[in-house]
Length: 174
Length: 457
Image (cartoon, rainbow over all chains, first blue to last red):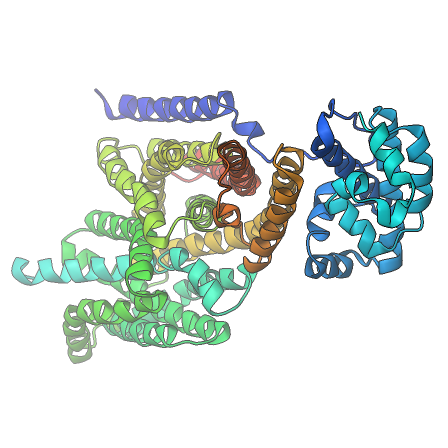
């Protein structure tokens, strides 16, 4: 085989190998191998048929996080990590320039949205939802964060802020 | 020159070229460790590479002129001594600024050494063509082997050892060159042989710069992906990237069977670009998937670097000056590649890390793990993130100890895998745009390669 012919074969072989590799990796999903996209917290998310106190509490927490994150203009996931510890909350406040008052307002709004969603999903009776909303609008920040982190407390330890409504609350749980 | 003396001298000259040209890439695998030990940033640590390559690019041609005037043996020997001394200073540096300063001096010595060697090689190996082949092969082997050797030394000893061990090798390589230097001093024949150098081969040197930018990016980005993204140890990463020099050896064999430098240059540039395209489109965070692209880059770099260096040097005198131009082009390309891509991938790493962590947190929030366990996981995850100074974290320990309840344990293990998958996706995707741009640089090199035949060859 002549030198020129070997040169042509080498170039053609290189083109074929390059196209084959790129094509194979594209076909295997190479262009879409990236982290999953998170959802916009301002978009309404339907509850997924909650069964039992624990699942209702989980849905409630997610709705509350969505509502608060939407108010603050951050992702639900960022806020969830920020509320995990007081140190994380401080770092979050520094990074986003959010003061305690603004955070408290957003977290309360988030809890109210969670009550709305719970009522809409049939997980909470309107008889309980209305006084609960009124209470949550005034709740201190620390207590509000505790409720987001452990929403079961709303349903089984609510006496401290719902007073006489607790027995009613439990009777209206599905 | 008798054959008995020529052989060890030719070996010493090849070792000197390989040693100096390996230095532009040998610290790549040590960069993550330097970054942490010297408490700097990714952009800051990049200057350990950039400074060396920048000074080489700027000083290669002036060093070649000096080699012709003062004697190549003398300049090469002094260059190797400076290179060795500066290497020791690099190894003893405790600050980034002193390390970068020592790297600049090291590059100055390196430029003098390689250009002096190139002037000495034709007389040592018997012909200009053979000298060019030896010089190009030594440079390509050094550049390709550099990261693997650097990774092994970093893991087994320390990053400082990379520089400290270069000194004895440089001194051993300098010994036979000193004999030439003494002969030059005794005969003083050089000034009579000076003649004006011809024009450098612009298109071959331009193509060399572009392809060097792409290859530097391939090495640098792949090492960062393996160590910082996929959390491999330096020795693990060294083993993985050693595929490239092995493929380069095969590429050199393949190139010997194709006489057309243009065909080799075209094929090599296409293979380098194809390999980088593959790295830009990795479909999973699996080491095995980096192997086919690495093989392509390795074969491609052997073909294209030797073909372009031959094209730039053959038939052009003096060799030192034209060799200086090729060194300048290669190192300028590395500088451009690193400076252009560093801001892109550092921004992408930060964004993808954030996206991956958000995706992982979303997985935790949407999981059916009990709420209190979620909170604890979120707390541990946040702690891990804070402890990692911007790196992609390992999250396995955030899930320990696993719950004792079998059902809950299964859910937590699933969650851990999901979170790790999101982090792997983020780390891999962070490098995609940079690999893609490097592939584009490789493809752009086809333009001067294509034009070279019509205009100058």
